[in-house]
Length: 430
Image (cartoon, rainbow, N blue to C red; front, side):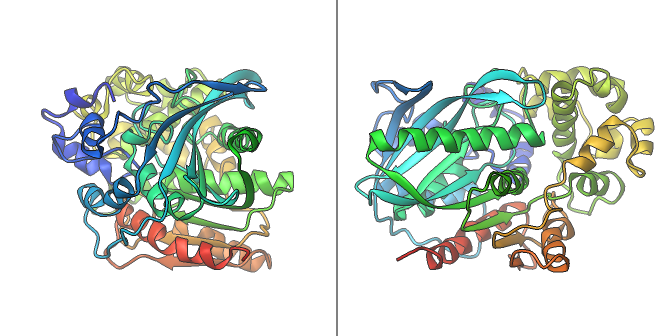
């Protein structure tokens, strides 16, 4: 990532705290993507020398092949640099994995504008022709290219590849509108656009699988934090479209964004993440731009922070620069007038946030919702909301799965990735 080298001085502590969020690419302090590629003994995973192939408006390019040795290191040594965890992933990958960036046409539902988006396709090298697939929805990142189709910038993505693709699953992962190759504004937690980006990637992948000698069998969904929310939104859209999903696993999913943000404002825990103001800032700008509420940022964000927040939303400054300017508490970042509207949910922003919940329908798909008792971003109650909802409606079998009394945001992600694979495996057609 272009700003990585500039981040190293003065922001390491803030960066490590931020890393607990939803998938920022955190390596050792002096490690870059190119360093990792060098250790891998291969060219950088950027498609150098590969030919772009196009069919019916969908383009794809082979980025690189992760060897089994590299995948095993992702599960072991690389994982240890990403954060402490009590358990160990088995380093026993069965396949090399071919990685492709997919660029596909889509439409922004909120505006009707045609656009191009990107995502990742990963296939086990030499695996079966007919594959089960995991659609993985990535967590929050603060860089435009800290996303799945730039896998060296996203350890979150690499862990999913090592856990699933190296054992015979196909993996797809949308970058979302406004990230990856997209030049649109960041669509952070904008419901219909998130659904559309994921759905159109699925359609694009189904189009290009036959030329690659593969086809899709069962479909599973998974995601963490923002990606957990996106996974539930995507599931809702897939069920609406009549597309069968075998099972879903989410981690730290903020299923009710209204409740989550109100928690950040009015009842933050003692370990509340210092980067929550950056999260709400990006959400406010996304709402302003996708729902055409131009005066929203000025109403919501205190004047002394507004210019920096706007530059951050436009990827002109990174989190390290922003963190030197804005406070660490959401209640100190937002205007008192905007906060006063939050409790009753009044005003265009709060009404829209309430409408963007992702659990209030009668689902037909089994779900395991993983949560951590010490999660610094997603309240455990919010992560568990789909369980009671489906029970009261006699809907899908839904379980809340604790990841430990000391599990924070990142450990909850590890727990979900570790435990969901055996569950998915048990549901495969033999």
